[in-house]
Length: 425
Image 1 (cartoon, helix red, strand yellow):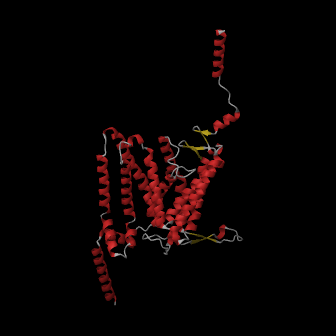
Image 2 (tube, rainbow, N blue to C red):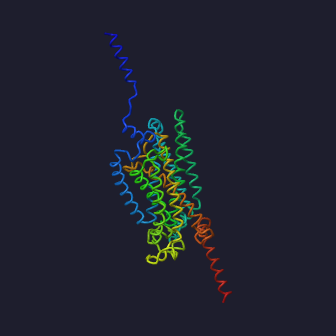
Image 3 (tube, rainbow, N blue to C red):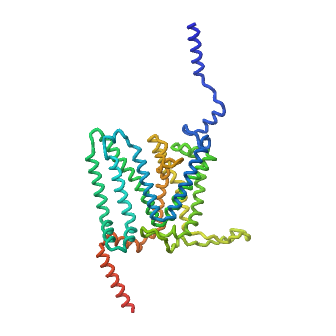
């Protein structure tokens, strides 16, 4: 009996080791997998995910449109809120509660560095708008001008205070954790402020230069999802297994076409094209400039005689929009790929759960950060006037001269103009 039992066990184990031939449908299923994860086109729960994602997208677009309607100051406030959420999500990545129980107030130190960086960044970018807002009040003007003049020193002192605070809180058993958090905090500040501060600069150059790049990223993201959802079969990159070539190419073509058309639509609105020179919220009126004035191109012999349109009106900014669209569709997605690799390194699916169906705020801002920097650099390189403008000279006067010196300069200019009038008469 024992011999029969042992022989049956051996045969059973032998059969267990035999390789089972896969059914054709199973082979197909495995063949449609990329790096162990199914492509979106084969994901059985994709419709539920798409529904949740669609609801969240509609709410985000609605809130975003309302903020745009409210104006520059409210858009800036929205960016600040986004930065705070991003910092919170990134701070929590390396947080260890067991270590921080021994370090009371250590989390507060991270936020001290965060708000110091915020004060420095926005103090540099928005000094002219802040001064222009308080010019009517003499006392407030002197206070604000003094703060701007010594802003760099104030921020440096706040940073040194945080540095000393960090040194004084070092504990023997947590040295490694504390220094890791110190380095991590500085990387977050560089990532969040080093890039998103350019977003605020774009806003005050004209909402157009903020809204168009941001819209192109949203369009690219939506159509990459839709093309991948319905047509995606070929994996694009190992870092993001559900990204497909079909989604990438379809979204690229859609984004570039959208850039050309959206630039025309947005370029007709003074609310979007006029720069904001102060921190008020009133309506804007300005000369749109040559970038937003249509140029007419005759179609001539290119179209048949029955064709209703004999010429096209194209704004010069539309040609520049093509460059923004190309960057948004080809380069900006690599910000998302970087974030995907980052999440894989930390073995997390999303940076947070602030937005249902999308993950955290950082998950939605990865490409926006890359795009904001490019939009600012492109605007300064190819759009903004390269010579010294009145605004630039006034900004230097406000930054570097005291109120008495500015008053003296005003009197001297008045005398010069008076002498010229006498000479001409």
